[in-house]
Amino acid sequence: MQIGLLPIATTRVLITNYQPLRAYLEQTLKRPVELVTAHDFSSFHQHTLAGDYDLIVTAAHLGRIAEIEANYLPLVRYTAAHRTLLITARDQPLKSVQDLRGKVVAGIDPLALAVNETELWLKKQGLQAGTDYTLLQTPTPVSAAYSLQNHQSAMAISSPQGMKQMPDSLRASIDVFATLPALPSLMWLAHPRLKDDLPKLKAALLAFSSASKEGAEFYNATGYIGMKTVTSEETRAVDELAAEANKRIHRQKISPVQNSKMPDK
Image (cartoon, rainbow, N blue to C red):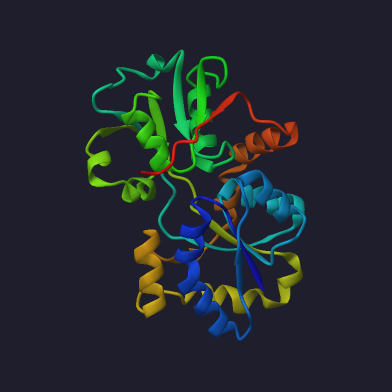
């Protein structure tokens, strides 16, 4: 069984973090389990829609597209809600969101839920990506935060997990400008060919807790709290963001984005 992991971190970090969960599922389900990811969100999503993964761990809006377009079956999501944090450099504060005009906003892959939510939030306040501000794509949320410290950007897109990954010195140099509305967190979905295994898969994931050695290792490494069943209300809650992401996907190009080669320090 192959599990596709959305590339929200470097491949090494992602695969390492999920090893305890892989071992648990292999033992519980009595079948080989392989972890795979992709170079970027777009290629991961293409593999998802092509049916290349048996299970996926993906952002809620991309999961919703997979559910609608490829009949993927929602299983569980991580318990803690997704929160997008907009951060600024402490020595370069913004008085208002309108101060972003002509400036740079840094974030990870343009298909990321946090980036899509930020773009939509700014759009509703009259700021259009590529026209009123420029997106700077960085490898990770930590890299985006460093772009603030280096005054390469005026705002960066992060999350509580992203903040946790920052060294203390970097975290001390930034402030949270805004916290956007909560959204469903990363979701697990199964390809329809696994529909007969759904009860077993769901039970195994829900039973994976920090009470076990593997669970403690996984949740300590990722900062996730646990898993809960995904409701239809939660999947529909991201329909607007899913529609925005789909427009971007079908355009087959990203609205003006700079690419940062800045590594994590």
